[in-house]
Length: 96
Image 1 (tube, one colour):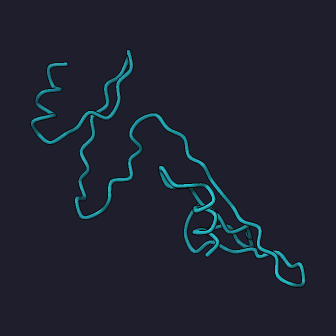
Image 2 (tube, one colour):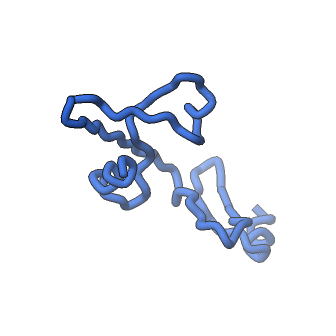
Image 3 (cartoon, one colour):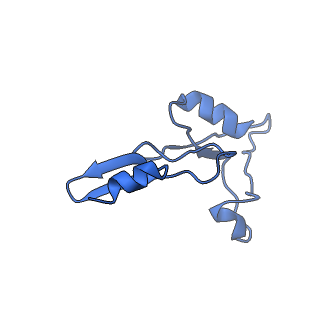
């Protein structure tokens, strides 16, 4: 507990606290947006089904991410919803 004021003076910010843990953070790359969730959180994923006139389904291979290393792994276009983003907007963004 006595180190908390020292950490705050060194640039750390309060992130979250519960009865057993206090978490402070310091974002080390100011040129990059801090996307650390504001506290305990969850992530929502979306995917879009795109059909062409022949009723073929659009499937993609990721260039990066968890499935990029898997050979012959195809998936629907999708990804994570940004904080405060409308789910419909996220689907359109991920498919576009």
